Image 1 (cartoon, helix red, strand yellow):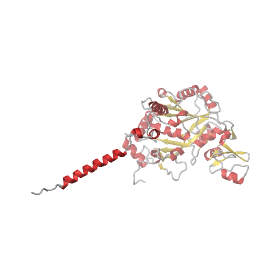
Image 2 (cartoon, helix red, strand yellow; image 1 turned 60 degrees about the vertical axis):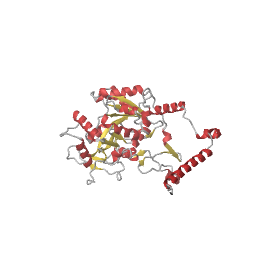
Image 3 (cartoon, one colour; image 1 turned 120 degrees about the vertical axis):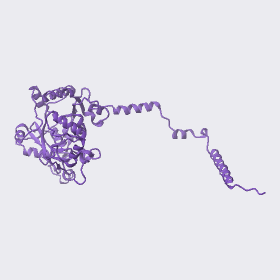
Image 4 (tube, helix red, strand yellow; image 1 turned 30 degrees about the horizontal axis):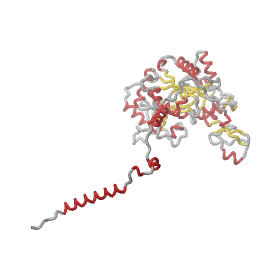
Length: 426
């Protein structure tokens, strides 16, 4: 009887033998740990040190700890000549001079870049136009020491997002931000700062909670904030600049820098702001609004000494403008800043509307919900559903939005792009 060979079993046994052979060759060719050179082992393997790990965690936590100002501080002194450059013994403003032309022509006068004016190119377009339009006799003189700017602005839960734009835009110019929070909520601005909000700018932020003063007159709140600032800042000079705005108002950084560098401008200062709604992509039909928001510390001291407010929040007509202000920075084409009204998400806009309705700043004639607000943003309508907003174009307008917004559109896309726009509308 002939025996049949099961070739499947033969193939299986052959593969097993081959696998065992490969393992034996690998083990025989691999050196033992004791045969490895010690320096080579040291170079290729590292162990986590508990102490160094603990130190790293400590440093990481330290960077996350809020660095806002909590005790006494002094404002830095700065000499103005560092901001100017000499050409043939003539000092020219670094940001406004045409260096290539000055070197090529070797003249004794400053050749200014487009948008800059004055004998030393230190007047930005918006300020130069304000001086030309002013009826005051303005005689400017460059200072030896720059003024310091104390910028006070107020925030609520629903509009704290714009506070980030204000601080980032004006951080190189402002010496101290005094952020006054009207919220006692658990996640108010103090909580956000503690969690890392504006981490890189917190060294210039003085946080003051004014929620308990919310129902007091504006004069009382202003005096309370001023007293707190005086206790913290120990070297305030009367010629320093005191600026205050709402949380939705972003001033022109170039205009503020001018005020720091020169003497001779009349005060108080008003700013004509570009009036945007929902985002910088819509503009209010009135186009601008004027806010009064800057004067010297000396004038502020006098105002509080006589228990009177220097400024109204905004002016109602051109007559009031001429009678009240020393200088208005900004016109209908060149703006002293931006007023981005209701530039929040729909839910926060509803909160803001209810607050304005409570204080009788606005009257709501219908029930407002999220879909309704989204539709207004998308189509560019005011809350009365009758007034059409003006569309703005970022590719055509030089004052479309603050520089920090335009340079970080990936971060502030909700301010430059209308996410609720109807496709057929555009």
